[in-house]
Length: 184
Image (cartoon, rainbow, N blue to C red):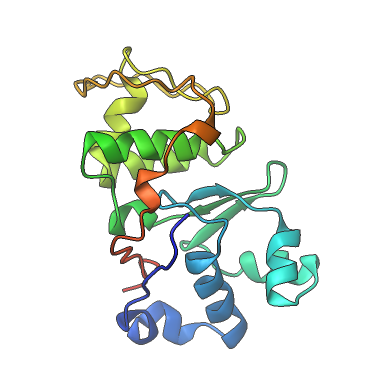
Protein backbone atom coordinates (compact mmCIF):
# COMPACT_ATOMS: atom_id res chain seq x y z
CA UNK A 1 0.00 0.00 0.00
CA UNK A 2 1.27 3.45 -0.85
CA UNK A 3 2.17 5.62 2.10
CA UNK A 4 0.93 8.68 0.25
CA UNK A 5 -0.87 9.70 -2.93
CA UNK A 6 -0.68 12.97 -4.78
CA UNK A 7 -3.61 15.02 -5.95
CA UNK A 8 -2.53 17.80 -8.25
CA UNK A 9 -3.91 21.32 -7.92
CA UNK A 10 -5.63 21.07 -11.29
CA UNK A 11 -8.12 18.70 -9.64
CA UNK A 12 -9.66 21.73 -7.95
CA UNK A 13 -9.65 23.83 -11.13
CA UNK A 14 -11.13 21.14 -13.36
CA UNK A 15 -14.54 21.79 -14.87
CA UNK A 16 -15.86 18.54 -13.40
CA UNK A 17 -14.74 19.12 -9.82
CA UNK A 18 -15.83 22.75 -9.86
CA UNK A 19 -19.40 21.62 -10.61
CA UNK A 20 -19.41 19.05 -7.82
CA UNK A 21 -20.84 19.65 -4.36
CA UNK A 22 -18.59 19.55 -1.31
CA UNK A 23 -19.79 16.01 -0.59
CA UNK A 24 -18.90 14.87 -4.11
CA UNK A 25 -15.44 16.45 -3.87
CA UNK A 26 -14.84 14.87 -0.46
CA UNK A 27 -15.86 11.44 -1.72
CA UNK A 28 -13.70 11.82 -4.87
CA UNK A 29 -10.65 12.81 -2.82
CA UNK A 30 -11.37 9.97 -0.40
CA UNK A 31 -11.54 7.42 -3.23
CA UNK A 32 -8.28 8.72 -4.70
CA UNK A 33 -6.43 8.53 -1.39
CA UNK A 34 -8.07 5.83 0.74
CA UNK A 35 -6.01 2.93 2.02
CA UNK A 36 -8.21 0.44 0.15
CA UNK A 37 -7.35 1.83 -3.27
CA UNK A 38 -4.75 0.30 -5.53
CA UNK A 39 -2.88 1.97 -8.36
CA UNK A 40 -4.98 0.20 -11.00
CA UNK A 41 -8.19 1.79 -9.73
CA UNK A 42 -10.19 -1.47 -9.46
CA UNK A 43 -10.40 -2.46 -5.82
CA UNK A 44 -12.47 -4.11 -3.11
CA UNK A 45 -14.12 -1.61 -0.78
CA UNK A 46 -17.38 -2.30 1.02
CA UNK A 47 -19.39 0.88 1.54
CA UNK A 48 -19.01 0.35 5.28
CA UNK A 49 -15.27 1.09 4.97
CA UNK A 50 -15.95 4.50 3.45
CA UNK A 51 -18.80 5.01 5.89
CA UNK A 52 -16.48 4.51 8.86
CA UNK A 53 -13.73 6.69 7.39
CA UNK A 54 -16.03 9.54 6.30
CA UNK A 55 -18.48 9.40 9.20
CA UNK A 56 -21.40 8.93 6.78
CA UNK A 57 -24.08 6.26 6.75
CA UNK A 58 -23.52 3.54 4.10
CA UNK A 59 -26.66 4.76 2.30
CA UNK A 60 -25.10 8.25 2.04
CA UNK A 61 -21.90 6.80 0.59
CA UNK A 62 -23.94 4.87 -2.00
CA UNK A 63 -26.00 7.95 -2.83
CA UNK A 64 -22.98 10.21 -3.36
CA UNK A 65 -21.02 7.54 -5.24
CA UNK A 66 -23.95 7.36 -7.67
CA UNK A 67 -23.56 11.08 -8.40
CA UNK A 68 -20.05 10.74 -9.85
CA UNK A 69 -20.61 9.00 -13.22
CA UNK A 70 -17.55 9.05 -15.44
CA UNK A 71 -15.36 9.22 -12.35
CA UNK A 72 -16.32 6.11 -10.38
CA UNK A 73 -18.49 3.02 -10.70
CA UNK A 74 -19.46 0.72 -7.86
CA UNK A 75 -20.56 -2.90 -8.02
CA UNK A 76 -22.62 -3.48 -4.85
CA UNK A 77 -22.84 -7.24 -5.39
CA UNK A 78 -19.04 -7.54 -5.21
CA UNK A 79 -18.19 -4.39 -3.19
CA UNK A 80 -15.81 -3.33 -5.96
CA UNK A 81 -14.95 0.25 -6.92
CA UNK A 82 -13.64 1.26 -10.34
CA UNK A 83 -11.95 4.65 -10.75
CA UNK A 84 -12.37 5.20 -14.47
CA UNK A 85 -9.20 7.17 -15.18
CA UNK A 86 -6.73 5.63 -12.75
CA UNK A 87 -4.78 3.79 -15.47
CA UNK A 88 -4.68 6.93 -17.61
CA UNK A 89 -2.73 8.70 -14.90
CA UNK A 90 -0.53 5.86 -13.70
CA UNK A 91 -0.27 2.87 -16.02
CA UNK A 92 2.24 0.14 -15.24
CA UNK A 93 5.35 1.00 -17.28
CA UNK A 94 7.48 -2.11 -16.86
CA UNK A 95 7.09 -5.87 -16.58
CA UNK A 96 7.75 -5.56 -12.85
CA UNK A 97 4.87 -3.09 -12.53
CA UNK A 98 2.62 -5.36 -14.61
CA UNK A 99 3.38 -8.20 -12.18
CA UNK A 100 2.47 -5.93 -9.28
CA UNK A 101 -0.74 -4.92 -11.04
CA UNK A 102 -1.73 -8.53 -11.68
CA UNK A 103 -1.05 -9.36 -8.03
CA UNK A 104 -3.14 -6.40 -6.86
CA UNK A 105 -5.97 -7.43 -9.18
CA UNK A 106 -5.84 -10.96 -7.73
CA UNK A 107 -7.36 -9.54 -4.54
CA UNK A 108 -10.36 -8.12 -6.41
CA UNK A 109 -13.48 -10.31 -6.45
CA UNK A 110 -15.09 -11.13 -9.80
CA UNK A 111 -17.13 -8.09 -10.80
CA UNK A 112 -19.41 -6.79 -13.51
CA UNK A 113 -16.97 -3.84 -13.72
CA UNK A 114 -14.25 -6.03 -15.27
CA UNK A 115 -15.17 -5.27 -18.93
CA UNK A 116 -14.97 -1.52 -18.31
CA UNK A 117 -11.66 -1.98 -16.50
CA UNK A 118 -10.34 -4.11 -19.33
CA UNK A 119 -11.29 -1.38 -21.84
CA UNK A 120 -9.46 1.16 -19.71
CA UNK A 121 -6.39 -1.10 -19.61
CA UNK A 122 -6.54 -1.56 -23.39
CA UNK A 123 -6.65 2.20 -23.90
CA UNK A 124 -4.27 3.46 -21.21
CA UNK A 125 -2.15 0.48 -20.09
CA UNK A 126 -1.34 -1.67 -23.13
CA UNK A 127 1.35 -3.67 -21.31
CA UNK A 128 -1.16 -4.70 -18.67
CA UNK A 129 -3.86 -5.43 -21.23
CA UNK A 130 -1.47 -7.60 -23.24
CA UNK A 131 -0.70 -9.61 -20.10
CA UNK A 132 -4.41 -10.48 -19.79
CA UNK A 133 -4.29 -12.34 -23.11
CA UNK A 134 -0.82 -13.84 -22.81
CA UNK A 135 -0.96 -17.64 -22.60
CA UNK A 136 2.26 -17.69 -20.51
CA UNK A 137 0.54 -15.67 -17.79
CA UNK A 138 -1.92 -17.30 -15.44
CA UNK A 139 -4.55 -14.74 -14.50
CA UNK A 140 -5.49 -14.59 -10.84
CA UNK A 141 -8.38 -16.94 -10.09
CA UNK A 142 -10.54 -14.11 -8.73
CA UNK A 143 -10.76 -12.46 -12.14
CA UNK A 144 -13.29 -13.35 -14.78
CA UNK A 145 -11.84 -14.84 -17.96
CA UNK A 146 -10.99 -11.92 -20.27
CA UNK A 147 -11.84 -11.70 -23.94
CA UNK A 148 -9.09 -13.15 -26.14
CA UNK A 149 -6.57 -10.56 -27.24
CA UNK A 150 -4.90 -10.62 -30.64
CA UNK A 151 -1.86 -8.69 -29.40
CA UNK A 152 -0.55 -10.78 -26.55
CA UNK A 153 3.16 -10.26 -27.16
CA UNK A 154 4.20 -9.45 -23.59
CA UNK A 155 6.32 -12.37 -22.47
CA UNK A 156 6.09 -12.65 -18.71
CA UNK A 157 6.98 -15.74 -16.80
CA UNK A 158 5.23 -14.76 -13.60
CA UNK A 159 4.55 -16.95 -10.57
CA UNK A 160 1.00 -15.67 -10.05
CA UNK A 161 -0.15 -18.78 -8.22
CA UNK A 162 1.89 -17.70 -5.19
CA UNK A 163 -0.17 -16.29 -2.38
CA UNK A 164 -0.68 -12.54 -2.28
CA UNK A 165 0.97 -12.36 1.13
CA UNK A 166 4.29 -13.49 -0.33
CA UNK A 167 4.23 -11.06 -3.26
CA UNK A 168 5.63 -7.55 -2.82
CA UNK A 169 3.41 -4.75 -4.04
CA UNK A 170 5.71 -2.97 -6.46
CA UNK A 171 2.93 -0.83 -7.91
CA UNK A 172 2.20 0.87 -4.58
CA UNK A 173 5.75 1.89 -3.72
CA UNK A 174 4.73 5.49 -3.08
CA UNK A 175 6.41 6.69 -6.25
CA UNK A 176 4.65 9.74 -7.70
CA UNK A 177 1.08 8.61 -7.85
CA UNK A 178 -0.14 11.55 -9.89
CA UNK A 179 -3.70 10.34 -10.21
CA UNK A 180 -5.76 13.41 -9.58
CA UNK A 181 -8.92 11.68 -10.67
CA UNK A 182 -8.84 12.39 -14.37
CA UNK A 183 -11.07 15.39 -13.99
CA UNK A 184 -9.06 17.81 -16.08
